[in-house]
Length: 291
Image 1 (tube, one colour):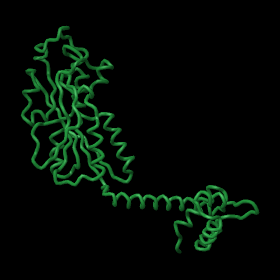
Image 2 (cartoon, rainbow, N blue to C red; image 1 turned 90 degrees about the vertical axis):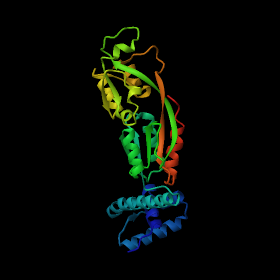
Image 3 (cartoon, rainbow, N blue to C red; image 1 turned 180 degrees about the vertical axis):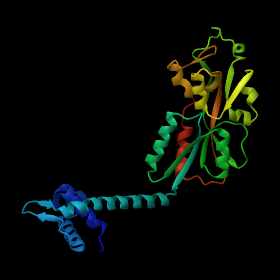
Image 4 (tube, rainbow, N blue to C red; image 1 turned 135 degrees about the horizontal axis):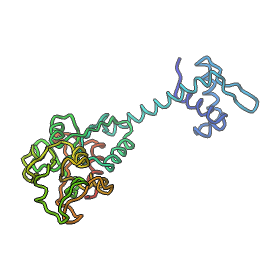
């Protein structure tokens, strides 16, 4: 049995519009063409799909059952056509993006949603690791593009572009009793929480000032530990702004201005051909405003 997509389109349109004349207008064909395709479909399938009344058509039980399959086949056909178009445009079948978990936020989530809307047939995988793990994964080819903290040193095989800068703030638990006038020395005997990649790249001393410290590869975990009263840390303002506004943690600095600024980098293998999906992600990330 050979059934064409045109026959199925004519059939579905006729069912949806409850008549061949209306179906012909929807698909842009003459009513006689629609009638011929319906008749041929009934012959090819050996099924009576409609009960023909003088002024109307009534779908038979067999027609109702076939209608569901016809819809599914037309959707699969549209998916196939779109997939062919994607391949011709050089859009990959899959894309893996890794984001440092200390940089996760809703704006990146919205960008990921845009990628799926723009390239609906791509298989998108998103990972959250720390900066050093992401660099290793990109080098190994397990990740196509990474979003990391600026680490100064970059491997020769990696390409890099700046994404955006952000304010770094000093954050403490909301239940600590410290001098009202900011005194950094008052934090010396408190546990400081620090991102572990800073230790990995030899910058721990630039971050840690307390006598005691704890390393974590997760900015989210560090913020949660501050909420629990465990210690204090330097964190990107945009990742802890909501917790500050909700009174879950507090700033401990001379003003609401930042203690310092840092940047985020986008990295990928130099030898990798940048396909449209990667280009889209890079372009949109570089449009993020500094925070």
